[in-house]
Amino acid sequence: MTFSFLLTFHNFVTKGSQTALLRQMAIKSGFVRILFDTVI
Image 1: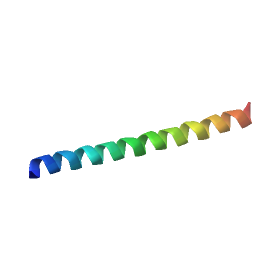
Image 2 (image 1 turned 135 degrees about the vertical axis):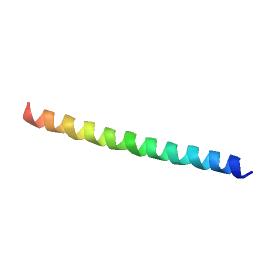
Image 3 (image 1 turned 90 degrees about the vertical axis):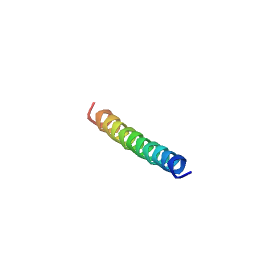
Image 4 (image 1 turned 90 degrees about the horizontal axis):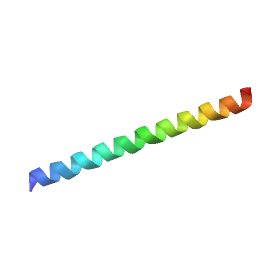
């Protein structure tokens, strides 16, 4: 029981960090795109 709980908790944490990383990358790419649009 504890092992499965740790497994699900680990999956939840890794998924959360992955989505946060993807969101951060999306924000950065959007910011870069806006910057390029204003420069060009």
